Image (cartoon, rainbow, N blue to C red):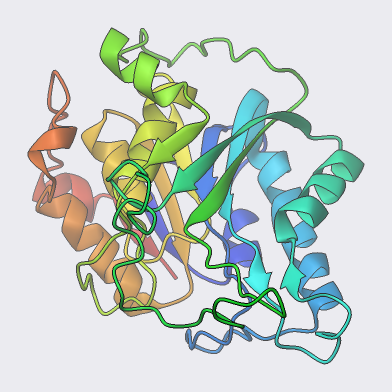
Amino acid sequence: MENTIICADVIEGLKKIPDGTVTLICSSPPYNLKIAYASAADDQPYLDYLKWLKEVFTECKRVLRKGGRLVINISAMTNRQSDKGEEYIRPVYVDLGVMMKSMGMKFFGEHIWYKSDKAPEPNSYGGGQFDGKKTAWGSYMSPSCPAVRRNHEYILVYSKDQFQLEKSPESGDPDITAAQFQLYIASTWSMQPETANIGNHPVPFCKELPHRCIMLYSYPNDIVLDPFNGVGTTTLMAYINGRRYIGIDMEQKYCDCALDRIRHNEYSEVFVPKQKPKKPTAEEFAAGEGCVLE
């Protein structure tokens, strides 16, 4: 299975993918913050939420090939549930680490996504990240109970079975440039969040995040999967960078948007690869290249 958008519940969609066929999974799961999304419950009790994530990532591990990488973009979230008196902030990344270790996944490393393309400067309110539009300071100018204003997220990288990723028979030669490698290998990534309204999706990925992950953690022609594909930023960046793709989403309108972005090869000049991949013909789409599976 390749070059396909699967319209289904995430676990049902993952079960359609054969064992050991995916090189890179790059995704950001729902944050359990009551964001309306089809019929999905985005406000589960926290332990139920973690149990569901483990079911998803267990399937992700199954479809990864040996040495394949699972890259998870996640943040810590303010706790608004009944136990908020015990845990002000949900350190989801910590619980994910414990979960992944229990599953036998190997922790490869992490990147901190600083959510601005401007470097932090003294007295700059976070390099432009805090521009006066946010006012939730907590106990302003008092140590009583200040609210930490989060301007970063985590990008956690795990490997299956081993840390080294060997080329498969289908893999091409590495195509990352020296400049890209030297920038992307850093543990801190300064990237502006997506601000465009793409398909009316509530939380679209910024293009730079999957682009960097794809270039750093996969070979050309490898299969890249996003099990929470949304409007298809990961699958679009995989296509543009000469990788095969699989995306899963439960909303038909977002699956249609993801396919439409690939058909029209929507991209910024920043992401043009050395050799643009051939755009699928109408006949190839009709024959199943880029089809939506019900």
